[in-house]
Length: 208
Image (cartoon, rainbow, N blue to C red; front, side, top):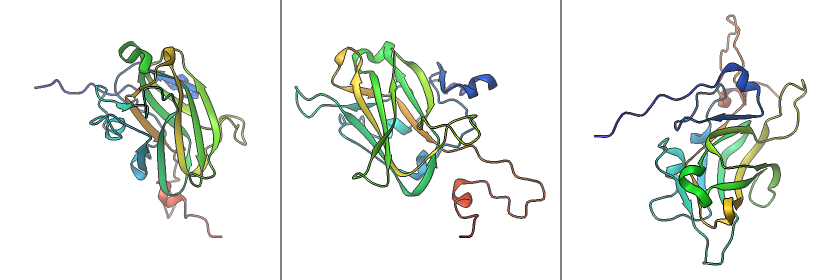
């Protein structure tokens, strides 16, 4: 019988203000941004049998999506497509990569694209990684919000995570986990007659 999973790590409060939050624990970190991954349809550019999209979402650090090139000469990009049934606010991504285990299969450059569909995707963030080991959480936008205290969420139906390059120019790719996070839910006043805090309810709280 396998050992029970370890408890998830909660970053220190001061770390939550960092543009990049890295936790070395193998389990997904406990974060104040809601996980909206389950609301989307997930697909990938390719996968080795038994190492598909389910391995990105199962929370098991020992499983991974294994992307394979179309041919022996086929380079990147590999990509993960995440499609929501409606336009939704997306704040951050959390991705689990493990260079000590995956070596040249570890992504070194990521591009995040967003849009209403596959035909109008635009780059919103490009991330360069140096031998990552752990869960890395970052904003998918690089535009400051109105208060200047953080970055804006991206409102989109669809986002893609593009693996542009691997360490040591590897062709296959391993990603051990991925989560999509929405904006922080606002605190609700005690006298609020409609104390709805979920993303779905907040989408329809204003009459136009």
